[in-house]
Length: 414
Image (tube, rainbow, N blue to C red; front, top):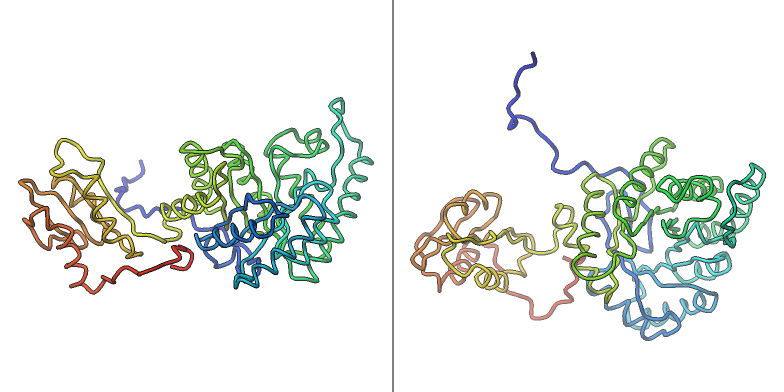
């Protein structure tokens, strides 16, 4: 009979260690390696509308977006990326890493894009497009080889241009746009997604190009999770260490889209998988940035705001907790790095906020108590003076700083 081991003696990691990957540079921003998990988004402005595109790129960057993707559907749009880059440079934002999003018959488009951007995203299911034949049920070995050779012919000029110009490449597989051959061979499945990516990776490696980022996206969370887990397994077996970009594509809008994205992205990050993320919302892309940083903060991977710990309130709560929490937040939200707890009563307050730097706890009879690192500092403070006394404590401890008069609100700069 095995000996009983108290649970408190078992040291379990809170999340799995992050998978070790090579660093891939996108302009001056590194993905993978020892870099933080990067936040990306994509503009919705038309690529041919240079001013609108530039305005949105700058807005995203100022909101904390570290890499910005631009739809590049044809040669004219690829050429206009040069005008977008020039305007960004003129306005002092030429350093923002840009990605060209290339899909159908992409060789010529991607070649032009490499002149103006820092990374090219290609979609293996569409890069060498074949009109689907719904009656097709198999491919012969000769036909498979012919298609692989066609892919290599189309991809090789882009590989050469990327190597010459220091441009990275994302091999971005979408579940909804797998090629007919892949679906016939492997099914419309996570296995098919992985095999689609592996074909392109092998071609890149055969020509000495390894500045690659890999993504496997789906609109359904279970498929996205399965595909990325299998991708990591296959890469580990092959000795590949490419960074992974995570996202639940076409997540929709509103709360449900945020929940889907948080579950998909957050689950994999907790497993140590992922080096850069995008939350894909059918909304203003500015809304994506805060969700990305909130996912990272919730997992302790990047801290870009004050962490507020607050109870849900109940009959024991001795003050209007939502109002008080908002008052505390408004007074302290600029003190990035702190954990502050606002608890409604003494029953759970001290225990539940033990990990917080500071605690604000209701005591009854219109009184509150202040805590530091779980230890009572001051008791029986009139509730109306609670925020004032909290600020005084922060000043006494030397952690207070006055709110900035103006800020870019860019969490990536904090």
